Image (cartoon, rainbow, N blue to C red; front, side):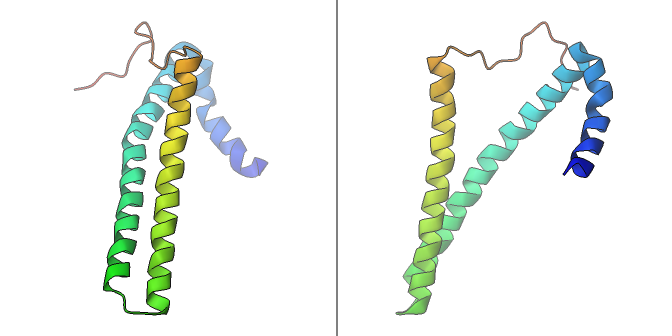
Length: 112
């Protein structure tokens, strides 16, 4: 495990040494990446559920219907877990008055 973690830590160590600018850039980039990935993953779960629904409607009797029903159940459970975790995080942010914005005094990555 340490053989895999150590190179990652060594890669980010110089950025963390310049903690004020390097860490802010890393956090900003990770935040941007997560803001793009999370809706994509939820969308894929919805497509997976719909695929199971179409398979269920098109399937005949027997084993095909059971497999399609399993796909639909996994899709619903996946959507439920992702949306529940998202709601729980927002509930905790609201309950403890956490500020989830990046302060404006931290230098931002220039965009053009």
